[in-house]
Amino acid sequence: MESKGVVTAIDFGQTKIVALSARVGWTGEPSIIGIGISKSKGISKGGIVNADEAALALADCIYQTESSSKTKVEDAFVTISGANISSKNTYVNISTEGADRKVSREDVLRALAQASQVSGLEGHKVLQVVPRGYTLDGGKTVKDPVGMPSSHLALSAHLILGSAKGAKGIREILEAVEISPLGLVAAPIASGEAVLSTADKEIGVVLADIGHDGTSGAVYRDGAPVHTFYLPVGGHHFTNDIAFTLGLSLEDAERIKVNLGNAFPKSIPPDERIDLEMLGLSEKRKLYRKQVCDILKERAVELLRMIGYRIREAQLVNKAPAGLVLTGGASCLPGLEQLGPEVLHLPTRLGEPDGMFGLPALIRTPAYATPLGALRWGLKHTEKPARDGKVFSLNGHRPSLREIYDKVSDKLSDWARR
Ligand SMILES: Nc1ncnc2c1ncn2[C@@H]1O[C@H](COP(=O)(O)OP(=O)(O)OP(=O)(O)O)[C@@H](O)[C@H]1O
Ligand SMILES: [Mg+2]
Image (tube, rainbow, N blue to C red; front, side, top):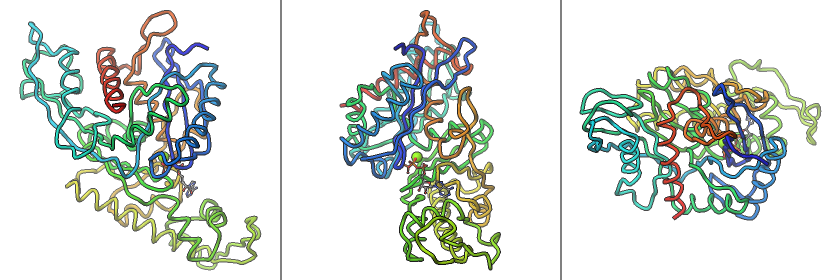
């Protein structure tokens, strides 16, 4: 099987492991050639809790991906999330070294490497460096400084930090299925890649990916993330609330939530009843649908307030006029878009991932924003020779920067490996 010119991303979620492989054609446009989706096992709150189970689930996912693409997955970008992930902004200043006093790729590489070696992290490691911008000689700030005249280069970067143990756990699972990590991508940064426009990121936006056990979020401003957070509330808590309050099994509560749930009970007629038997549940009771939705609303308000607290904590109130964009399976609960503005006074919308050639409709939903965004990040930040040895072009990004990111990703994954 041939693997050249193919980029793969793997998202380790609490409920599903998703792998997506894309090949970039001569036009520079990527197309999806391989998809694997398997039920997640051995993973809890973003960390590996049973390595054997997790490796088996990943092996199944990779088998599906390779079978559909007829291409071996040798390396991949991998998502990270969970309570152990935090973030920090940093600034790095370097003198450019070229005789012509122009910024070279090596200068940028040195600045990125220096940013990843920030001190005082109290047991954490830098797992991902997200450049926010480069300032030339204390004046103009640009996204890509290579080739620009400047004797000093200042890098503003958003660092994703995580525990060494967590990164090691992921590396071991990948090793078990013989895949090399190309780079780690924080889940909310990945989701942002899939659903946020350049304009959203420029004027300020909050991304919240509501998964199963938790919500990963990021606040963007001036075109890049400025704050990343994790909240221990996800879709599972909504299901739990219905189950415990109404005395139902978790399976029945999940089915009610997914089929008839709504976080904005004002829109539900007060006399509308749910016939549990008609829903195919073992129970024969009838429930008021509004009662179920009131329970869901309570939890949704709590989660939105927690997001608001994180925005305040980061001193970003009134600095996200593009509003709140929701992704993750649990964001599919109807009513969140109406409730968001009431609780947070922010416009709220569902993040629908942009398409990619060959992408089935299932993946173009908020529940798959993380794997799709991780793939987009990988496509931007890698460079591989295509079959005839030419370097394939990616989304109009200059090869120089891609090469740099590729090198930095390698350095970071080497570093996380230690
Ligand atoms: N239509 C729906 N309405 C409400 N909740 C839903 C709906 N569809 C899925 N969910 C919830 O989404 C959650 C799973 O979300 P997702 O697929 O994003 O999780 P994950 O990526 O596997 O996990 P995580 O990101 O937490 O590691 C489940 O709790 C599920 O109940
Ligand atoms: Mg997820």
